[in-house]
Length: 170
Image (cartoon, rainbow, N blue to C red):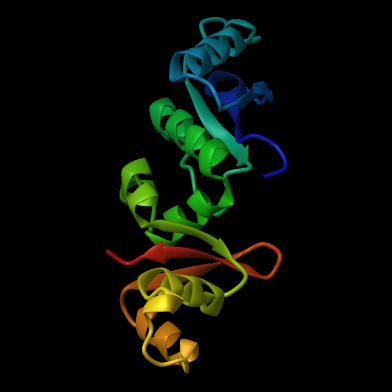
């Protein structure tokens, strides 16, 4: 990804008073550090006693949707996963229907890598399972093997540069 995930957090007291007051916060940090930045923004508010805030915008989270009141722990955890795994993680989370279904463990168990095509992955998988020196027949129908694998064992998601992310289904 081009830049790190970040959120725009705004003071609700200022917003309700007709003022725009908030800050962009880099989310690739501990949740306590994010909270500290939110507190500094609220202390700098023109409205005395400002203490409520909301996420009014975010960027570099791929297709992942954040709510106005997403927990800072979740935001921090997801940002770290995006930095660690890149767009493959955001594609996986979107496919799984949200963050609650896309833990780091489930991603790491499912993710097989990025390939130019499903066929490239299937060919590599076949060659790992059945080394050339152990094959009785030279003719291999890689297309059929590929089709069979992607009928239940694996799935793919579009990746940049005309490639695909490959995941185990279970």
